[in-house]
Image 1 (cartoon, rainbow, N blue to C red):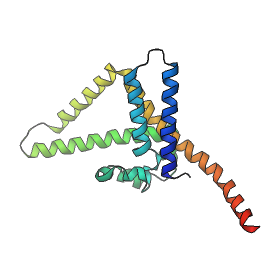
Image 2 (tube, rainbow, N blue to C red):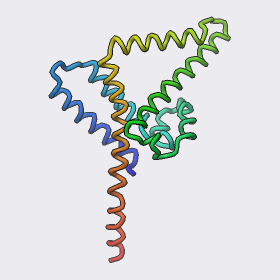
Image 3 (cartoon, rainbow, N blue to C red):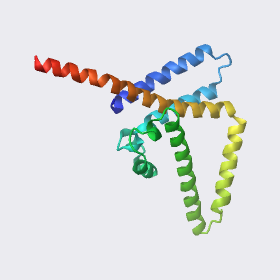
Image 4 (cartoon, helix red, strand yellow):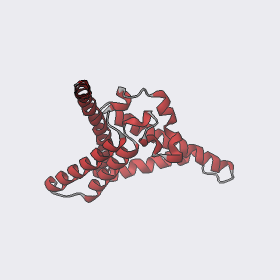
Length: 181
């Protein structure tokens, strides 16, 4: 299994390659969509990919906000279909992050409500989700590009792990042969 620095190099190389291909073949050159894809691909590659279920660089990248991922770390077995599934891994992390943001928003608004600023956590959160849904509907191409970027980074992480694991046993055999000679 490759280390974090290998995953980082693969992430940057892949996003550069994909963006180059996109700009070469895309007739309309939707700049916002390309930026959303690149941004979510990089964020997901560095902070939301498959190793959030361990004390990894991705997990530590969240700094003081890493508490958000603690339940995920406890519940998800490492390299399972939940964390490293080509589709399920990214989808579950995206849904988990949306749920965590919702919970944090509700708790924050509830705390503000207790201080005398009456927002109403339920109304505020449902309004936030209504605005999010409207933004997705009004900017469908960019929203889809962001989602694909997030999912592609997770899939690339899994592919890198699979390729790294497939290559590793051969390297071990070569090392043993050299040391035996």
